[in-house]
Amino acid sequence: MIAQQEHTALLGALALCGLDVLGEERFTGPWDVVALQEVPRHEWAMETNGLRGVYYSGLPYQGRATRVFAWLGMPLEGRSAEVPERSVASPGFPPSGSPPTIPPVGGTPNESPRTGLREVAGVPGMILLHGGGQHVSPLWVSYWVDRGYAAIAMDLDGYGPDGLLPDAGPRFQFKPFFGPFPSDDLREGWIYHAVANVMRAHSLLTAQPGVAADRIGLNGLSLGGSLVCLVAGVDARVRAAAPVYGAGFFDEGGYWQGHTQSMDCRRAREWEALLDPGAYLPGITCPVLFQNGATDPFTPPDTYQRNVDACGGTPTLAMRDHLDHGDFWRWPWGENEVNLFLDHHLRDGPPPPTIRVVEEAEDHVVCTVTSSQPVVRVDLVHTTDLGAWQSRSWQHTTLEVDPAHFTAVLPEGRPVWAMVMVRVALPADRHAWFSTRYFFRDTAGSPARIEIDRPIRSGDGLFISGRKPFGQRVLLEGSEDLCEWARLAADATPTTGFTFE
Image 1 (cartoon, one colour):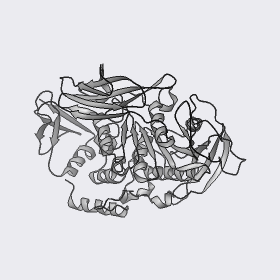
Image 2 (tube, rainbow, N blue to C red):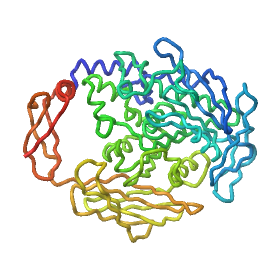
Image 3 (cartoon, helix red, strand yellow):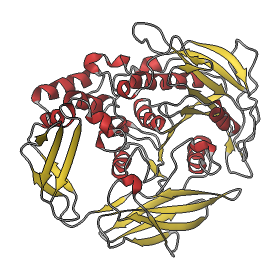
Image 4 (cartoon, rainbow, N blue to C red):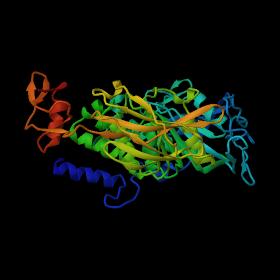
């Protein structure tokens, strides 16, 4: 358990960050939400391929002012609500020196005969967040402009069109990403600035004439998806959010676990409370699309499921057994689920299918599906493989059932991970997959609990030995002072090994 003095200090840090610990107000952490919702100072730059570059003010860093570069695009006046194929957008920016504008689409909403989307007063907006170590892509902005959205994407790594800005904020690097911490001045950390820069981009986008300020969405990839979870929990202006790959609870497993476990205990607790996206998921009030693959190299299924369960908004799931990790929107089929979800919540398009689990037992689950699109396939997807989650093989079993109501019988092997995936048909010979949450069934008697008073040192390493039943997972339990365990396991030794008889 956390030592009393650390627990007291942590509550104090939360209070300083504006959280009513005993209340129910939205937790906004260290960010000044009111200030960040004001339109930032900005300067319009070059125009290229129908997009306009813009520099806007960031937060102070190391005692100096900072700037952020972004690409912003607006759809043409009277542009069709749906653009089935990509084209080069020409948003029609006014001459250099003035901001882009678009006259609002007035009158009664009219339904598009091909998609069911409606033309409504103003255009919806999309804020795009790139992954860690990546840079802003104007092509991604054009993709959403082509679809009838006002769109903005900012460079979260301090770059502009000609390279690193001389007045950039903190760069993304692994160690600075996990610090500094409240005791060192949180305002100097990358994630603090990244969240602020996204919120200021939101304010800048909604300040443009013709943009519907109440219909703004977030779409992020990888670490950008993690930031989506965080920003949507902090900023109540977000109408819908679609994090792809990215998630929170970095300390629980996956790619980031080694970085969080390299901290001392106090800093790890502060990270979890103030910087981890998982701390902000309960504050989300908008609909959220969670999309990821079960073998994604960054987040294992159990950690990803915890994100879904913690979300305060309405979650829609589009999980697959395997999903390549990359620039999702570039692939012809990649954005089908994201587009359907966001068009529904921001443009009154048809809803994605709703999959409900109406009965759950040890050996089966019963589901119902309500869909405005034709259901063409329902699969039970499962794995009984052990070992690293990235290497597990998932099996598909197509269910011969009434798509509206079906029973999925789980395989006998244990432990087993499973989910139900539903494929629906979309216009232009496209399709989309949506899913249930993960179902996990453990080996009888798991997890085996092994009581160890203290780990055994061996040279520069830390090794733990014990007995366990074959095939069972192991839960290691140490002394009550978990901070002492963190110091032994992470600070004093470069490696940690586990052996069982």
